Amino acid sequence: MKEEIEELWDEVRELSLGNSETVERLESPPTPLEFLRNFINPNKPCIISNAITHWPALSSWAHHSYLSQTLSSATVSLHLTPTGAADALTPLTSSPSTLCFASAHVQRVPFPQALRLISSSNPSKLVAYAQQQNDCFRSEYSSLASDCDPHLGWASEALGSVPEAVNLWIGNQHSQTSFHKDHYENLYAVVTGEKHFLLLPPTDVHRLYIRDYPAATYTYSSDTGEFDLELDKPTRYVPWCSVDPYPSVDNVDAEMSKFPLYFNGPRPFECTVKAGEVLYLPSMWFHHVRQSANDGGLTIAVNYWYDMQFDIKYAYFNFLQSIQYQSTPNPKMHETLSEEIDSGPDDYDS
Image (tube, rainbow, N blue to C red; front, top):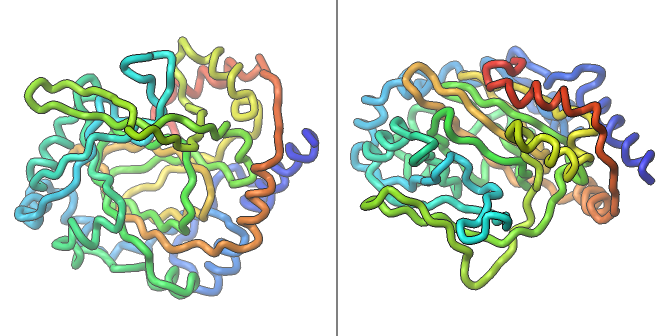
């Protein structure tokens, strides 16, 4: 079984990206039929240029004054963490040896204040990130609606529906998103800054070591400037990916020993999505995201979530996930991983 599963990893890569180690780039939006045949049906990611060049957002959102003025009367949901890692595995304050799934402290604030907190984020004190999801662009940020398209027409036609949700993301280089998957077809449009993705196909599910972790939520005191992390009550558990692809130098050996399937297996696909580009992230692909800010200190993106089809590939994924699979550490990977840890976002291929 070990050999068969490892062959599957390689075969899916070949089917997804051929002999290339990079995500395919399109210089213009595909026709709906091309998008359906070449990317949606084979569950294959791609990056599309020149799909949003007509958006006023590409120029206007680079200016803090425009955003603050347009959203002067808006109250938005701001996510606060001490490090920039929200919806991620974190040691419990009361028991550092116990990992929990930590959610951000969410605070409703006037947008101009939110923008100031995002711009002044400091990972040793407080990192603010506007990442509410839940269709937040069409609710909290509706004043910006005329600056971009309500949906991507060629994608909507190919998928046979309009987006279930449209979300706005405003942060900077201090925020990152841990490995996870979504049950949506995702069109991710970067407006300012850059997003750096690590991608793994659904067939690599064993390599992410999905386990149940107790849920916890940060609380933040604006009076003291201190965070606390407490387990949710009643107790609940969240299945989450255990792997940190960028462990600290001191933790490299321990991480490789705990998660050999990830560190021994095929490398994740890496891609950088620049301002004005759109990433098609197929449903159920695992992704880890870091970001670089623009000259104004912000990274802004709009993403469109379309409902996925719960078809045969979903049944295949559930079957594969049910299979027990193990591996052993490979000491030869240590040097390669150490080099990757030392690399920042600017070292990614684009």
